[in-house]
Amino acid sequence: MALGTPVRPTSILVVGATGTLGRQVVRRALDEGYDVRCLVRPRPAPADFLRDWGATVVNADLSKPETIPATLVGIHTVIDCATGRPEEPIRTVDWEGKVALIQCAMAMGIQKYVFYSIHNCDKHPEVPLMEIKHCTEKFLQDSGLTYIIIRLCGFMQGLIGQYAVPILEEKSVWGTDAPTRIAYMDTQDIARLTFIALRNEKINKKLLTFAGPRAWTTQEVITLCERLAGQDANVTTVPVSILKFTRQLTRFFQWTNDVADRLAFSEVLSSDTVFSVPMTEMYNLLGVDAKDIITLEKYLQDYFTNILKKLKDLKAQSKQTDIYF
Image 1 (cartoon, rainbow, N blue to C red):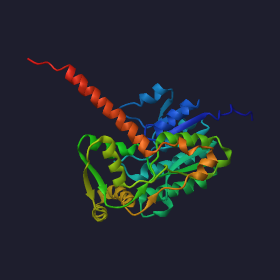
Image 2 (cartoon, one colour):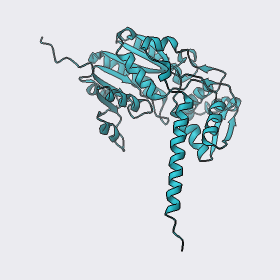
Image 3 (cartoon, rainbow, N blue to C red):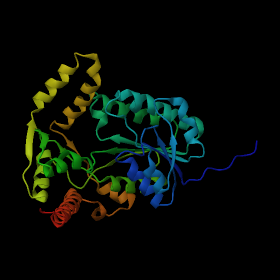
């Protein structure tokens, strides 16, 4: 039989392209000259911003395996950033959907599969989301596909809605009394390092962990935001004991099982653990200078500087347009 048209190595499919990390992966891929196809679930508000950037958007749903194969035609690499929505069962997308996607990738002869996981997911089988991530890692490792698994600690972008915006709006900021430390990383840096790893054949079939320059407690993040915002936060502290009780309470009702699953993950984040790893060897492996990785201080400083400037400009414009009778 004659061979078909070879698939270009620059042809990639990004799954979960509208998410916090997925959209940065799409932007980075386009900037670096990749042909980007985005798998997006059918939605009332179309993902026009992805098309505006230059990506191709295809509709499919991981919870409906029959919709997946067509999205993989002509694709060399799959980058899997997808995760389930808060209102749906964790297993639907994060396990059953991922298994279907990996099986389709095997059947379609996908050359490389990049999967984002969670740091220390193998150490917390009591947390459904972390157990599912670890099981998906193992399923991918046993699939025969060429893969890269990247475990992540936390996104800096998530801190904006959790801390920065409530402080600026003088609303309550929720935290716990646990000394958990998380090495948050900018999703733009995650995307950049991902493509460096993707081009390095020595990293094929490896499990990597990406972490930010420093691990922060909740209180340290709040204090930093207060200093940059120039105002105090209205902090509501939730004791870990209450969080644990709430999880046990929700287990009594079948319809709240998924709430309990997510509370279990929150409980881990509220324990005396550190979500971080030394990155020196990783930087050397990828040929990256540690100075090029954005720190949380710089990320939040840029955010508050831009927001406060906009607020100041809006206030000035408001004064200019005031009309007195």
